Length: 392
Image (tube, rainbow, N blue to C red; front, side, top):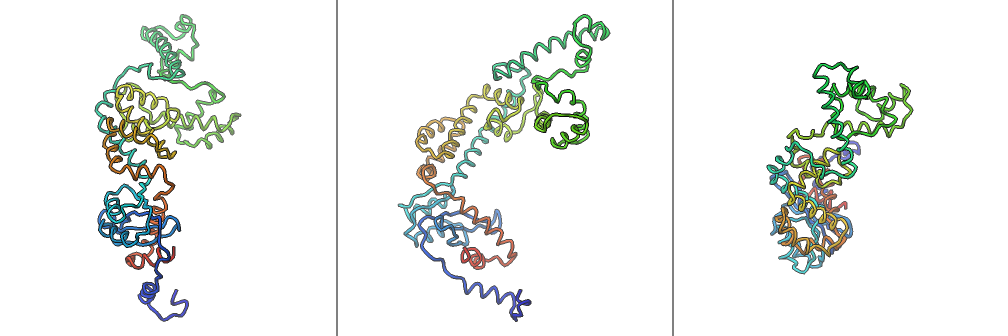
């Protein structure tokens, strides 16, 4: 740029001028957000301080030591609110520097910590979960009313299937089986081929006559619902895109679902995800898996309920039930998480009541990372301040 403007200066001179002309921060912040950022991940960190009212970066500190943060805050006694994550070092520094300031825990970190606590509870119970999932019998009491009707129909089909296979094993031809049982020839063939073993069947619709073509396309590698629908339309199908899209979704779920009684168990993270999701968002196999785990491990079901209640409190900003929740949670599988919240109860309560959040600070840290990468090896603290603080 200097060459194009005919300025006979070097890049070092330009950077030096930026350092000297950086303007100091205007105004004294009253509400700040504080968080760390990485000079080099896992090795060295700095601290970013953001004015949440003016939506600008106030200062960058070269490290995240509590003493550095304490000295910076102590020099600004007008600060009234500090939004932070659950970093104990920052909490102690703020308490020592300004004991009367209101500290607000970041709500996103509260939700992340709650999810991590429940995942840890699931991992501790994995041996018992393996035993529960490995059961070969499906308890009808785990099912909803609609699922129970389908399961009862499955049991009747299994009786018919055993009878037909027994006749076939005795050498009776298909024609005689049809005459004896009164079932259609196509049904007898499907039973003999083992094509009627599904527990939960999909209700027939306009797509039923086109299922052979769909299955061939699926086996050939076409997994996009819209593309499948266009190919069916070209062959004469008159149904809607929604029907084909739902069929493709069921196929994808069926490929990842574990068969009943297989003894296979998903990893702990998947089980935690299933248990914290609404049942109508799960496939039938996953819903039954969750129900089986909760019946076998009631303590884990209670932990899931406590996690859901805490998540609702954070999202809806209701702090009235926090004390009762802490009392219950300290006797559950998420007791360690509850004890940690109690030690930081004032900041957690403020997070449920106050509008302030550390989201702004996280956004400024993302901006800092972008600028730092643009400057390559010259991203010293003074140049970062010039580009981040002075231009905010």
